[in-house]
Length: 257
Image (cartoon, rainbow, N blue to C red; front, side, top):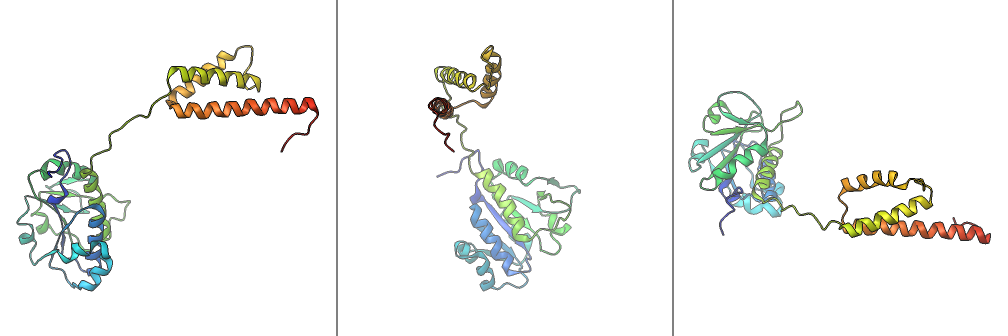
């Protein structure tokens, strides 16, 4: 089954971790990928890789990503098969195009993913990608933060994977449930006017003056048929209770509490 050309093809996207220092971050990144539907993980020259520690953070659900990840010793070799490379950076400026919002990058990758493989590269936890690493990238993406720009590696992977996932899933078609028709609305307004006059919320001398405001209020809300049914039910209950109180008072019965 071919991917929707209007959405990003996640099977063409790989997450590349360059020189990660902690195996736990590899496992947590794999878990983030699994959560968002990405499967291809490439790890470049990990410093201290221990499968047991990585798998503990990956949990059972993302174990297959860790088990099948590709390990390469040089970043240039790892990126060789990819047609388009995106580097993550906390630094702005320079000559490379920097997407300052991850969602903007994800949208830009939609047409690229149709016929190209894409790598999203994350640098070491302590210093990020170097200038030499960035030269291998076609574009950069920045995750905006509130002053403190250092993110945990797995957190950064999750944010990018989330935006990629959003760009991969077609937006649900917007539909409007059945709105109340004119007959239903007019019957509701008549009933509402009678009740509001009876409880002296609006004056009986000029009820349409106040009803026009109420009509404008409800028009802005675009009432559905079920909304009208609820409002009419409330009116019936108010009407019943008002009549009951009047009858109780006429008969001398104590009011219910």
